[in-house]
Image 1 (cartoon, one colour):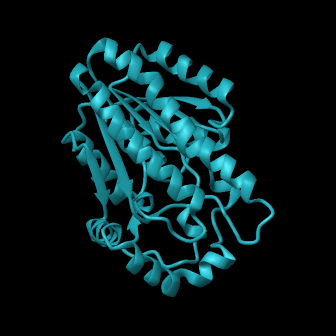
Image 2: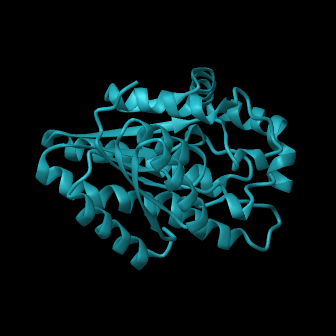
Length: 271
């Protein structure tokens, strides 16, 4: 599959979906600007992309440190002269337990990364795309944003907020020729999900996920939830009457809601 995108910016590029997208777009000859906090992982990714004939510029930055993050966004814009495609991908699941001593800290980190950094990424580049009257803005939300699930209060809430934001952003910029896509993955096999001990129905390999995302973007999809089986399941859950959802949730997830899920390992988070 060839790509129409020539200059691409990706956050959370050092691992998981972001890394695979970078490898695949790099292999298609796109010029990439890749942001994450792990210099070692970014440098390794840069070498792989260059070995495949692509070009990559790495930006080592913690997206939750606002001053550094906005400086990195400015640097990317100035170096590139403007992007065809911007993907706000960085995110963290967090680990919340009840009772828990670290829930406030986890909550703040998840909000900072999953919502604030994601929306700042899109808002920053939206300005230049609107002026140029072209471009494609992409936010990676989650199927988890449709309903509150156990021990994922911060994650589900930030992804729900991002879904609403992307919908509003689309109406704001579409008259200027700028596209906005909301990517809503289910479970994808990455270093993040490798830490999970809860059931992960319809788990998908990351290379398959990358192909599906890239195909959806090429087609100009406004929203894309996958895998389709998970999307259908969550759509049904979303539309259940609240009292039925509460009853099922108590039966299915009651224990997890008390003990908390294992969450993600720190070394594999925040891109």
